Amino acid sequence: MIDTDTTGYRMLAQIKDTTRCMVEALSDPNRAGIRDLVKELHGTGAKRLYAAGCGTSTHAAAYARYAFHELAGLDLYPMNSFDLLHYTPHDIDHAGVLAYSHSGATKCTVDAAVKVRRPARFVLALTNLSGRPLSDAATHTQMIPGGRDDALAKTKSFTTGMLINLLLALEWGSVSGYLSDESREVWEQRLALVPSWVDTVIKEVEPVIRENADRFAKLDHWLFAGPGPSAVIAAEIALKMKETCYVVAEGYDSEEAAHGRLQPLDGRYTLVALEGGSPKDRRVLDIALASRLITAQVMAVVHSETSAV
Image (cartoon, rainbow, N blue to C red; front, top):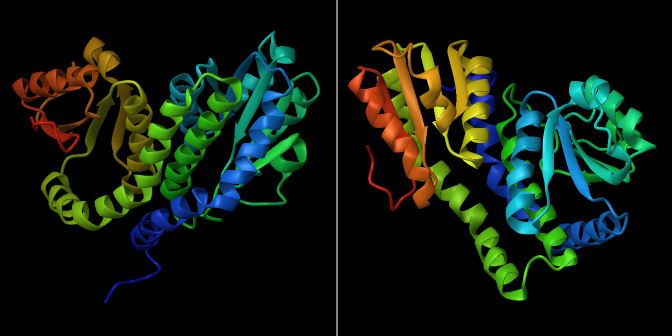
């Protein structure tokens, strides 16, 4: 009988709820709200964006950089909330700020929002819980569907937050004229498929993950590597491993992994290479092959059309 009070069970239950949260994020009412919100934010005349958070929310902010670069043609600079608070950018009066916090109560993020609210063009709170201090500190709030994530590792919140990042960037790109109607339609079709992709992964990949977990369970040193957006995922997975498994885990951009981070690898280590399917992602597979040569255990998480290592 499954102990429904265990950390692992709660985490798995929350992960399986991700599909529902993504369907809600893509619902017509939520999309209409995001569209109106972005029109208002764009109207503030912000020339660039900063995004801040702590822990998992730092990674959500980092992912926003790639979403806005790809879909809106806009420079977004991710940073830790501590830096936003104590090393506030000098051009903050020309910028907008995205502030991430699952609970909406992370003190450093709230304090940073309070400090920059007056000089910044806007401060957008992105949170799962309403009526929290971050929303009070911000000028605007965008809810991340799902409510409270009861797992210690906020995987559901992070994953759904990435989709919200893409939706915000998509609308910004449309309002600014960066995205053509044809490009927007392509992205609309892609994003509409995300919930079904997530559902398929959860249902079909879980047995494989369980098998690999048994295989690598005795190894307590982990290195995760991926290029571009996958580097954000690598850092987030490493954090989850620390939070739930109490192992040594680090996540890096694949090029950073190649510059010194592979040196300690031996048979005690597992390298997890994250490859997203585009030609520029292939470099991480070279790193995976090099790691095998120095006797590290290697797991490749690859696009369905990519040959595994």
